[in-house]
Amino acid sequence: MILETVFTHAIVRVICKDKSIFQNKDLIRSVNDVITLEYVTSRERGKPGDSHVGPGHTTVGVPYLDLIYLPGATRITEWVKEQFLLARDMIYPSLKGNNVVFNRSWINQLDKNGHGKCHTHIREIIDSVNKPDLVGIFYAEVPENSAPLIFVNNGVADVDHTEFPEKDKHYVYPRVGEFIIHPANAWHAIGLHQSDLRRICFVFDIDID
Image (cartoon, rainbow, N blue to C red; front, side):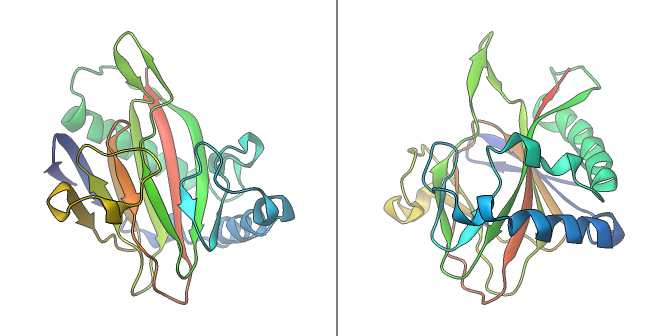
């Protein structure tokens, strides 16, 4: 587990070394079944909470398709819980709870020429605390020439990362099995996906009670 400071934020990166946790047959089948549902492939894009632009699909905002409830997802769910608790001590040591509560969990598929606009995951502020507490992005499929994750300093919602100066951007090129954890108020975007193969990540918004 590696702790990095990106602009004003503490970011944690960790690799899942046991690939069977996220590459088991049941989970692969579930992801493929969900991401190819007609409702997912034909849904209107560009709604609030959907920052993706261009080719690709996402299940964000569809509660009954939460990743953690899919067949085969038990092991990856338990693994990310453990990582969130470890990262909590690095990012938010003031959070003393040991219960990871999943607010949302979803699948993002990015296809060639897809990308994502600048956004955060803040949905509300309670007692001056951003909610959710933490965001985690798990990279299940990362082909060569895959889109980078881009943290943006002083970001603006729904603006493409190309509109920001390079000095205000920090590029992260994830590997297969990498889990990146960051505060909900960290501005970030997704660069251009240039591979013919899809890029698949699982995203988790959580609170710690």
